[in-house]
Image (cartoon, rainbow, N blue to C red; front, side, top):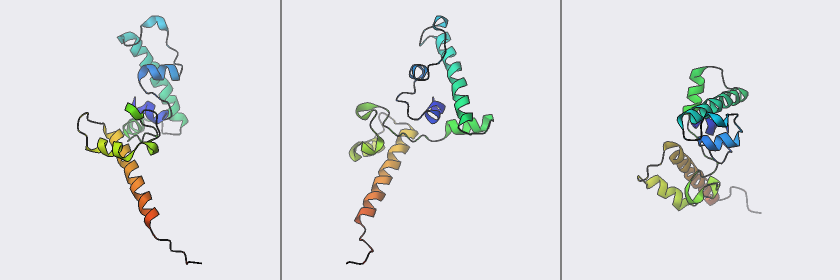
Length: 140
């Protein structure tokens, strides 16, 4: 679902059934229910079709290598994707929670969420450093 996160970053969920509902995928209900091989395979095929069209609409090159590169690129989450801060903008997640995530090995957070937490902590550190700098303007 990495490509879905890149193509539709503002959706609240990127699991197959959440995407099926959010994107109103045209999958006949009589081919199988969710979490059954045939139903999930059909939903995945319909989703891939939508994702490729979106990918091309966004101006990416029409070749497989570029598609794979985009799907493998790091994801920066605009909102926290799980847990007690699910749906909260990353900028509003407390420092101590992000720092805990960076120290935590169990559960092992994936590289994307760790990268998002690390980038947000770095942004906050730089912002605090800017706020502490004395003004270079002459006193009036």
